Image (cartoon, rainbow, N blue to C red):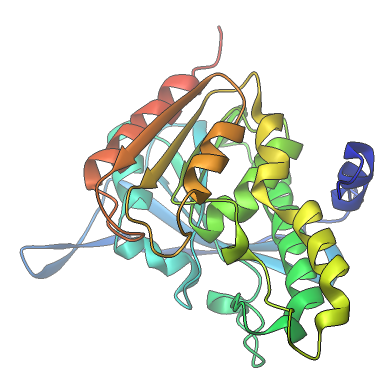
Length: 297
């Protein structure tokens, strides 16, 4: 089963005249050094919200140099964690890239995660919960539209270079980031960590009371799986990173997605499981994105 590309593009489109109605609160940038929490005075931080589709609001944390601008921007989409945008504390590229490369990092809360978590746990993909199948479909589409609205928001700011916007996604961030990047050509370059294409991102329906939904389950795959959208990256530089012993995405899933991305692409593998990403690969990805965000004079 496959779906016409025009139908897929139509499904993800939205009214871009939707008002943003943004809000902003200043926040301090803090880091842990030698066991102590210290401020980073050279950076500024805002917690922002803005309108998106279906009367939702996106929550994001912006981190950028306290002086200068306008800045290139890198949108960050976290993995499947209740910490949402705060999960970057483990891999603080939101701070590191702002310090090292002078970019604005934009850490977004996905729908169902962080500040947007729901009581029914709908933000968590579980293969043994086909009763969440259609809500998961809707959430994935919502997440992609939220990322598109993040671009709308960034391009409304005077301190952002609107032609220098990049994306970095990790795990679930790659699952929704590949559709976002493929469909939204305003994003110039992308980094995709520990994603894949395979059964791990679907639902087990065989032998359950939802067995009659097997065709629907496949349709959801064809409408939302990153492998459908990865070829749309052709013509824009991407870096794709996977682990050799990833027990979450499973055997072959990373290879399939890496192969599906269009050229030009840079492919990297590290020895380890899903969460064992070496810091050097984040550093390489940051430098990669900034290099390909250079705006012609």
